Length: 377
Ligand code: GLY
Image (cartoon, rainbow, N blue to C red; front, side):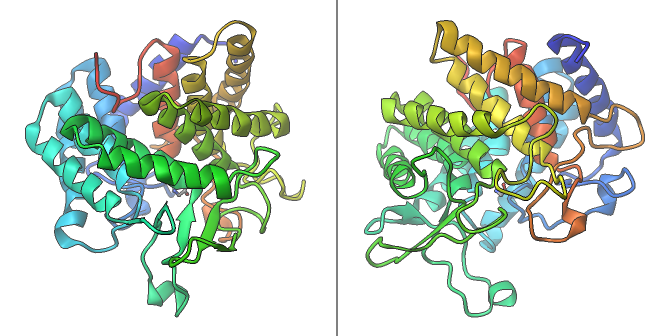
């Protein structure tokens, strides 16, 4: 990479400025032929808040009202899911942290705070108090037939926990934090393997908490290491440490980071660290999320350890820069993200909105800024 992180951030901001003028709906997911409007997903998607999050970051950076307008519209869109009460999942964290919580913190909107606390209450309501996990998804007979997901918890949920920690801080009610901590403890016990890699899904007996199975999920195979899942674990545990100060959470973030770093190469980040060498599928979104996770860990370490993680971030940012499209040919910036390993070619090597979100977040951190939804000092 032959430019500085401040120049890199400026290039991203320049692109997002014209994209914000062109993109007139509030939950873009990916582009087809360079345009977000060609690739619509439903507004219930777990990704529906990320464009709003990008807009709030851009508003924080520029104070240009065009971003605030779209950020607010994105929050209204996400709130429809709660009003209609359909397709609710554990991803309320992603959806509301990027929109309502950001809106409350950046713009001071009190109704946004209420919306986010309502979302946190529903997320807490997904907690199974006997088996000690937050249920990921509801059953969907149209997709899964008669397979029940009542025992499913997934590693991605680590990144939804900050909504619960935020809600405890706002309400001074420890229940949200307690649920987040119990879930995180379950993840340490049943998801994280001795080598520092993680299962994507654990299917629990919802009456006893016994592990029934560990399905492959979005990764290559049972027992493999879905790369974005490793990144969610790194970032999620580092954030859990930010909110709780529990040493075990920081240690776990470092342990999973160690696995990620030991298995990454300089050229590309695969979809799964255990996938075959060919085809050389990659997922740049995992690189962006991992960079953010390492930058969070770096806040709590010093000396050689900090320098080591800093060098790993540089390697990841180099991969990310090599995959950026700064032209007007595509409304998305980060290319070569992948949704999952086994879901067809149209979900592999595409832009994904959360790739751009975490790329921007990493660059903001590298330029002295902090996370969108951490309460500003
Ligand atoms: N949270 C789903 C994913 O990372 O694809």
